Length: 138
Image (cartoon, rainbow, N blue to C red):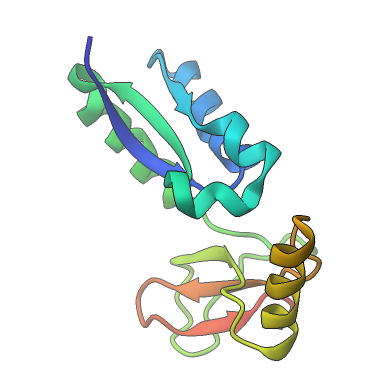
């Protein structure tokens, strides 16, 4: 049985959520480099993140489940579907900051110096239709 990487993650929570979903659909999965990235998240870039591996013969079924999972709408704290303020689309994803602002760069440097988790992480949404990035709380 040969394995193929279906998706990569930068944290084990998201990886295990999708792993559990695929296993509930009858697809045996494996997580590669989960312990390495969990113990030291700064190594995520070096090892290529946590890789969700599936058997090659079940890849097409797993991709179908992944697409269905990714198309689920995102809800805000009040239970409303989050929509893009630019095009009103609900086809959005939630992402982690890429350290573009001053706080993010400072947090990245301190994390590298002291070998600790990043002190400052910002979550935002990105519209998949118009590629607009907007704040999670707006």
